[in-house]
Length: 385
Length: 104
Image 1 (cartoon, each protein chain N blue to C red):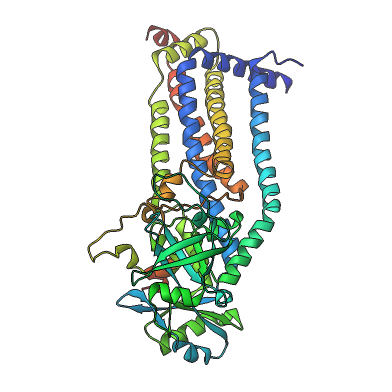
Image 2 (tube, helix red, strand yellow):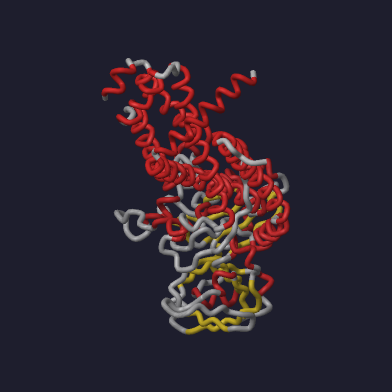
């Protein structure tokens, strides 16, 4: 037992020395390999953490939202729909919701304006998210808005409506409130010249959540122009949005996969003349073919395990400590206002196992195949190459 | 104890690597416990304000509120206008809008 272990250690010592002789090539290989694993792991960690976060937070989202569609687009919903929906058995409450988007001509940012009835007794007051508080003119130094500061808004009629910041959402809530401005109903209607009796959509509460699908079907029957969206739909949206099978995630994974294929292809198509000569010399001095395969196994394992551990650890730091700076430009797109949030780390043994079996195992295997071919040829022929 | 052989250094490096992975799991567990308060706060905001989406990007309304979007919002400018916002390439359409789920 000890003899076998000692043999493995001797072969490993030799393999590491052999890797050291081709330092430049192997370091370059390890860097590329580490980057491939880092990218793959970052995508997996980020998409899974976002899905987890959405699943936790949006469990408190409305049970059902009813929109009205006109010519295939969402339109304002008449508040008279409320009575008919309320009459459906199982519906506990129906509340009109007023919300919309406002493009700030000063900063160029898009805000989400949402009415909260609690502010109706405080006209002129708003509560803003941390992203809005960082409002600044493009190219000018950022100035943070504070409580009691004023923000001018341009109404749809072209007049200026100045609202006062009465509160700020905590920065820890930026994942849901970064671009949010909570406003009173009168101010919202003044800003967008919204007629009374119209709302953006309706929010429903039901007595038994098992009846949601039945109630949604009844609403669609009573008001064929309406579109009910269930909480489950909202939750499934985020499970699907960051699904690895689509969008940029698939693109990144494809690039990484092809980079890995090239890496493996390079290994599998053959060894360099120097490596072949080394194998031939080892065979000439008495190494068995199995010893050479063992050496190549250790070589593959040393490179891939080093890249695996470093790549995964760097990906963790990148996603959960540095808030994914490499992916920010993709998520940010043309957004002027961008939420600055830190995700709670959610990692699973399953993710690590998937990464291991997708990277370390194939690479280690492909390093053995060409060596087996070289190790079976005549040592004399190998040394003459 | 000195590490005289290269294999000793290699095995130590593997051990450090495995420890780093364990450390990641430990950090994730501790962070989840510490962040529980903030998650509760975010949930309370979502409940009180009846919010439906996360604020991940603000450039287009169908990526700011993907669950509230309809199939036509990415083509909002004119019928042949293709989706041109970068975040539109990142996000898939919500499952309830996809035909197999009985969407539009």
